[in-house]
Structure formats: structure tokens, C-alpha cells
Amino acid sequence: IGRIYVDRGIEFTLDIEQGSRFQGERQDLEELFGNLVDNAFKWAKSQVRLTCRLDPAAERKMLEIVVEDDGPGLSEAECREAMRRGKRLDETQPGSGLGLSIVRDLADLYGGSFELARSPLGGLRALLRLPGA
Image (cartoon, rainbow, N blue to C red; front, side, top):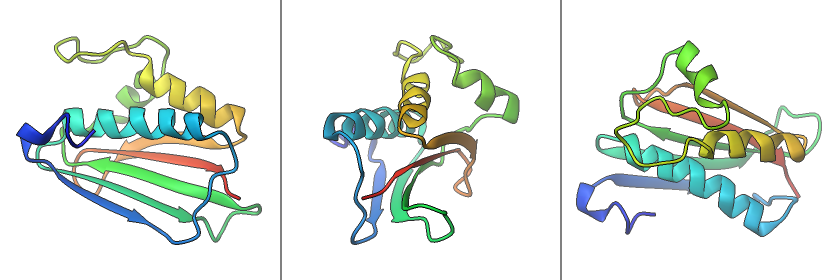
């Protein structure tokens, strides 16, 4: 994805805690990361940050994956609306409006969770929790 957006000069920070493992299908994880990171790069002004760690507070072993950007972000109402299947909040950008609903559906399928909020970077913060291995 970094190569797709190389002309934008986005700084990409990747912080994956050693020992972070996903208990699921590789192609599902690639789909999840692809949708979230592509979305972040699409809207970022200058930076995207991805962090992945085991959640120490979870009752069972869970990965906590956070993808953040410094773009315009979304309001609480827009965050809820954005996860509806086929819903596109900005028709000026390419896309099908399916990416975030696919992330939500896969998270549900694995017994995890997915939420959107405002990032400390100023843009969107996507928080995905999935079973760890």
C-alpha cells in the first residue's frame, strides 16, 4: 500500500509487538489490514500509524490492532454510518463503500470487535480486536 501512495509522501509508522499472532486465516488478516491501511492512506495528510499488540486486559488472548491517520476524521455519527454496507461518506474518493463493513463482519466472525473514533493524530482511529494465538 505504501507503494500505491508513494507520491503523497505519507510517513508510515509500524509498531508490532513481538509475539503478536492472529488465530485465523492469513487471507482474512490481509483483507482486514488492507482495508484499514488503504483507508488511512487515502485520507491522511502526512502520517499513518499502525500498532499491534496483545491486549493485557482481555479475558482471553486478543490482538489489539490500531490504524490511525492525521486526516479530517469523522464525527461519532459518521463513524456509525461509515460501517454500514455500501455506505460512502465522500463520493469524490474512489471505493465501493464496502471496506469498513467487511472489517466489521470479519471481526464479528472471529468473535472480535471493531470500532471507529477520533485519533490523537487528529484523523480517524480504527480499533480492531481479534483472537490472538
